[in-house]
Length: 214
Image 1 (cartoon, rainbow, N blue to C red):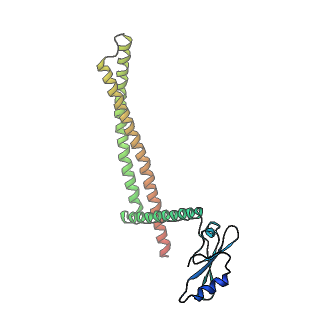
Image 2: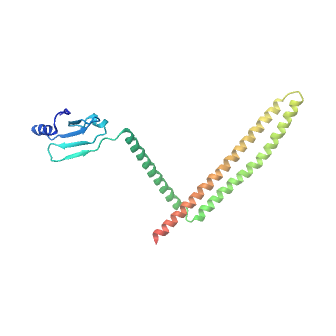
């Protein structure tokens, strides 16, 4: 049975359905944006546009059921956003639990974390010190090349090909070692932050276990 015109009273519509042998279809009633009622075996599109609840009458059973109006596009978007937020929160929680489990398995005592952190920081510092010493030497080479270049230019002969290549090579090496030292310094900061966080979480886990054991 298709949707029936608004003019038909609800009682007449129910009586019509009951009169059909074996009919057990539910009759749906809803109001459109202009306040007109619609009846039929499915909710009218006009009701959906009006955000109207749907009242369902079952021809085979007594009583009625109210069906909430379908959500708007804004509500659907909000629901998807909330679902994504909860999914991300669950993922972070699972990742944290996995990291904590690995942390507990990797270290028998917090001193082990401190020892490993200090060892890695020491290695990084040695790399920085070595790179800095090399950088000072390269800066000297670059300074001499720059001085030679200035002398050649002032002599009126112009910059020689050999000096130009030396100057370019020295500048490239200085830049490369500067970048390497910067990378090592950044790695030191990241290593410190990583192990400080691991130490904090390790202490929190130990504290929770101690509290649970009491």
